[in-house]
Image (cartoon, rainbow, N blue to C red; front, top):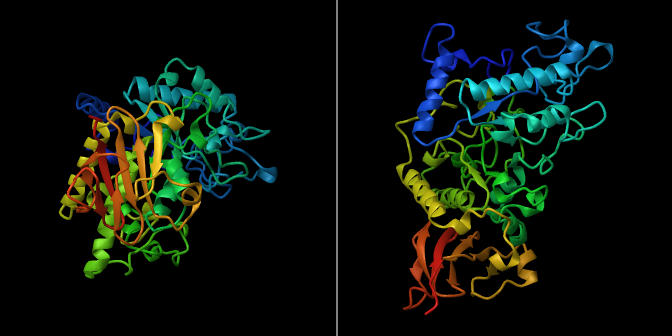
Length: 447
């Protein structure tokens, strides 16, 4: 059914290896069971915000004409409201559509064995005749449903209509894509923004999620997604390059917050390549080591590029494919190490939002950050101590020059995105941290 759905109970046949009708259902179920056997959960990206019938000029394939008022948000003159940007929008307050959506979701859980859903343009589901509310009929029905209330629910918490930006507002059980995390972290590693904003993102975005009983893990932290630049392109291009899409490079977002490091696109310049490598590794480290649930775009761990195209939905070719012969093995190993560090230190995976006693912030000299330093956009170095057993220091140099960091208390380096050197004879005292890099240190117990 893909991104222009008609059959909400039908896995997209083109994704299946089996050629006979219906085989994709058994194949999907077998796939889900195999993933479960390997210890992996299955989250399905679902599109209940529009259908393939488009606007008044679109095809009649299912509900158009016979059930317009029940299915779609309509305007005067038989026109279709379009807060999705896809020609129409499902009227999810309609009892018939609530019934259809819930029946479909339950089918995917009970018959196809999925563990949860990511809802594309989830704010469309929150639309009612009166307002956008995250207790709209279909959302309330899901919360009361004995099956759906037990699975993972993830919102893309916006659409393009009036009132559509609902980030931070979905009810307690829902997790949400955290776009503020994305923007802040992208800015951080091109030396923009304050430490106070970065600090909020490193520690679970309590300003957005510490209400309605929500926890840090309700923040789906991400830097890249299926829309937009890949991680490799984020550090390689200042501008989008979507000419292949045939829209004169007018499609795709212009708000990329990217930096090419000194040359646009492919280059042999060793300084530019070193800069890009450092920032790729630090971006991944910030994502994986921050409180919350990290979401990694497939291919970012191996350096996949789309050649600067940030809108490849229409490209079924080398621009959107993975080149399995060109994987960045060093970046893959770095990603593995980061995941091991996240797993090793529970303080990096807090169940509740940290209190002031759980967090301490230091400058490169190992002294407590002043309010002026905390809010000064020119200050590019911070040491964040997460208190626990053991405590962990995240030392970030987000600026263009190497910095000597004195640890605020004795610690040992357990991971560094770039090679570090000692600042003295005592290895627990501190290290010289290269530009655009991260150091993880375990605080040593007191004698």
